[in-house]
Amino acid sequence: MSRLPRDLVFGVIAIGLVIAYGVLGSRAAPLVISAGTPTPTPTKPVSAVPAPQTPGTIAFALRGDVYVLHDGKYVSVTSDARSIQPNLSVDGETLLFVRAEAINGRREVDGQITPAILRYTDIVKKESIDGKESIVLTGLLVSSPSGFHSVAWLTGPALSPDAKRFAVTTDAPAGTSDLEIFDALTGKRAALLSEGSFLADPAWSPDGKTIAVTSYTSGEPRILLVPSDGRAAAPLAIKGTTGDAYRPSYSPDGAWITYTLRHDGRNDVHAVEVKTGRDIALTSDGKSWSGVFSPDGRQIALLRESGGVIDLYAMDVGDAFTGGTAKVAVKLTRGEGIDGDSRPAWGR
Image (tube, rainbow, N blue to C red; front, side, top):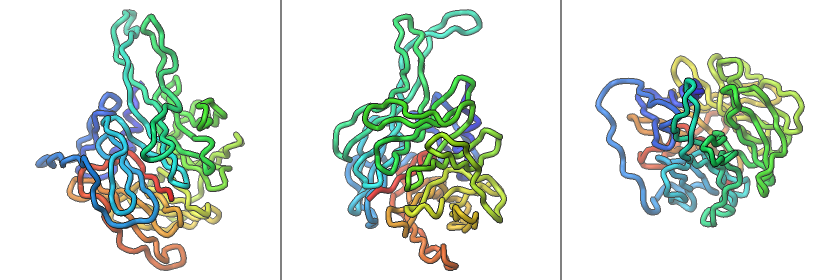
């Protein structure tokens, strides 16, 4: 079943963008929002690129490869043009990401057996940024000699605070996507937290007891708080806003959740106090999304579109949570073409 509805929710983030990478080309049609002169494809970095200094390590996706920014420069850690959605452990040592794969197979269509290219994703782990890769979970569920392989599309890997488990959303039979937890060492499933839902963007609370997700089960996106022990989920209360809330991420102390608010065709990064529902707008330009906290909670990394190009930014939240305002965001990348559908990750 087509994944277009969810891709539209994720993809139509910034006006005038074409967010269609070859790695996802078979899963969603290109999204052209407005006509005009095409933006030239920028040169993809092939070596370390100087950038403003930020603490820790930030991982992000750029035109089908995973990059990390550390010590004032960013460099690719993959080179296959099929890797997206990076996630870092709290200590910044372990990296998970999604890699798109394909296998020749067969399918029955209108009563006839036809050849088919079956696409799926793997969850890949690197124990260190420059370490070896290993597939910790594969979407090739069954490889059949007959060609009737069983495959799954796995998205949004998120390591638990202790890096011993990871959450992921997986395609389910009826076109839904469910939330599951797997052992990060063995790849064995530890828990199935939803059935028949339509979930995305898992993010763990610092104590490991809750996973915040975007839920499309009822249609429009909203944020759910899902206990990792399997108890019933509850919606996150957000006061004083109108629009669609999606793509959550916890602060290091667990007191706040950043999220993207879609309002009047615009997108901005907000933060909500978990206990009270008090909401704070961290951006107001209408072209910012996918905010994640730094390990010390003093900054956020976010994606922002300008002139038809997406870049990675860092912003000091300043006194925003105590009545003040956030500071001006600093641009970290140089317009090479950040993947707008891949949330960045920030580790120590």
